Length: 277
Image 1 (tube, rainbow, N blue to C red):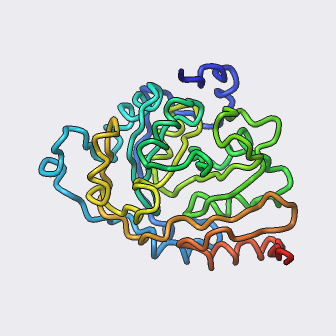
Image 2: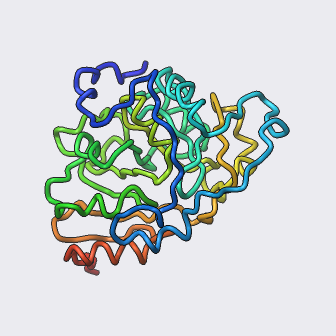
């Protein structure tokens, strides 16, 4: 059963929610066009001029759509119905679903052949939404806005006030959070009025996907595949950093933006956590 309706009264608090009939115009800007600190290193890897496939040729199952404004409402409705969709991000193609639907989350695990003990990250539309799902009050002011949107997964404590469904990553008191620098997924995250569970679009243990052809064998398990061309960031995925401890950081996965991420963290006077033993 889709459990997201249990949180309906709380979710409208999320900032900048997009009404279902008023999807804003997409603007695919590379980081180099944005006036935010420490972005110059990211921009080379996140260029927006992606190579496009001929959707008509590739659309063998009638599931493929362009990752454009005109298809955003359809994606939102699929997510609200508990379906899994495939979407481009600023790093890799991913499978996404409503993070508050246990049925949809289980479907992602089944599609990937992934053990349920392997946690899923969530994606939200805006940095200001993160506080509804994770603990952020221990972080230096402006840090999250310097890191995100971008190719970084921030691991934070869930806290007692998190409105995430408890069945997502049971037994863990932390959650990985993404705000990709990719307009399409951010718009559908806003419009869904929920967080999205997000994981790479591939079988567990297999290479990640930078084009829809890379996971063609899994198309049939998705409600829709949103095509955004060949992504230029490579297969390293996002940089994963643990920020659960005040004043400390720990890189859990180097990913595609480790150097830039560490520079930002240290500029905010965070110290790398050194594990003993």
